[in-house]
Length: 230
Image (cartoon, rainbow, N blue to C red; front, side, top):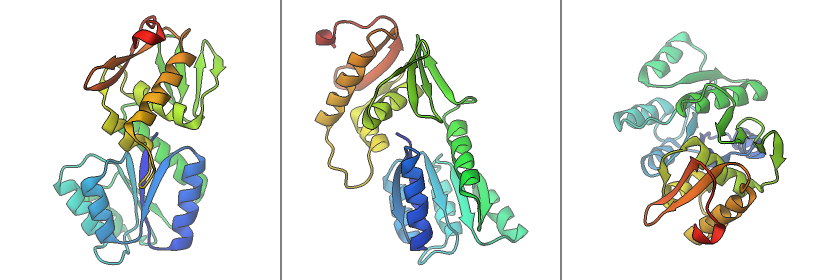
């Protein structure tokens, strides 16, 4: 599951953004100050940050400057009431990837979020494909030969992470960072359960989720082994 950090001190706007993004299938963490944003970005792993500029403590420009000084590649979308050209130039020069001025249309913001995430993941389309399996990133659905595969939200999240890194080992810690929000009561055993369920549902997809002992999981093309052997 794609993990987004929302940095916004307006509680009404923060709640609205969080609710909308979660309904769209994203994991979302929220902070309301620049200092907490800096701590979260220094210690957590995110696929995107939505960053206000006028924040208590560190302002958004300083949060962005520190983020890029650490050479963190996370995409940043500045969302602010500052509409001066000089502010836009400063934000982009500091390393922002996009700049949206309040008030804004939620549909446009969601489209920009999807575009930034696709770009960061090296995707040019809304679909991931391997074997006979297709994952619709925008619609958050999986298909085998065009036929929908019934997966729970957590199972879809596991599959998305594995497909976006197909051919590479994804360790459990990275998967947990990607799948779950702060304070979620989830352990490595839960990851194993979800992977097992996904395997069972993809037996006819010509893909295999291989367990790499001591490292994690790897999704690759090819007929799966019997479930008991994984």
